[in-house]
Image (cartoon, rainbow, N blue to C red; front, side, top):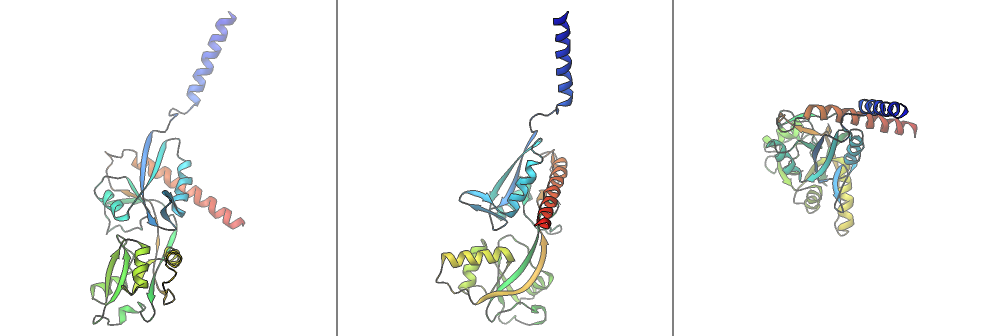
Length: 265
């Protein structure tokens, strides 16, 4: 009788454990987020490893949802990442600004990761300040941009349409700063922090370059960066809505924790 009682007691314990234990002991889905490989200090590849401010932030959030999702961050050239979402081949891309009309293939966007300040750096004697009220069509100002980035404000967009400025897309921050230093372009528009780090990197690699003629000329716009998700494609990514909800909650938890740490310093 004792053996029988022990058996039933053990069986009940196992049944209770099965009820209490999560139904899914292993993550259900593998999710890939494409990440811009050349956007320091936010997202970039360093010695073959993906790094950056946004990478660290999202990796912390991933740990909070790893009971259901295995998330891989995969570095890609920016334009290739955009094309992958536009073609419906990939699920998510980091870190686009919110351009709902110009990028209808991205929807929705995650909660904001951080706010970035986009500025223009120009060579001495050149300025984009008040370009809206000046006529430079006889000799347009050459403005460099990172390929695939939509970061102009309305004034610069209008100046481009009017022929006051001429836009040149180059591969990345490094390429633009080299062309700026060599006066192949007059100004370069990009995130302030990314540009300052790029200037420091160019100075280290090319100590002979004179960068003293370069200075910040104009604040162009302020943008928030996000994880952008492919629009629709529920048949291909059935976990889409659940993942976005859980990732947003995880990001908000991490961001709140970081804000708390900063306030206590």
